[in-house]
Image (tube, rainbow, N blue to C red):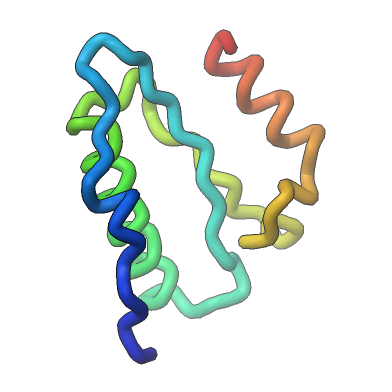
Length: 88
């Protein structure tokens, strides 16, 4: 896959240390393991950067067969339950 240019806003943005950062992420569960591992590692690098390496809770991954990379979120019930689980 050709590397796409990274959005400069994301590269230059970090959350202040006092801001709580939570992360709910999804990945394409239909891909092979190597693709999923690479994709998850790259997403984690960006999340850690934005969070200033200060993620408040463990990352919650949606990895079921119904999860998708679509936005807005297709699985509103999963998202709501994940947020409640984080105490948000």
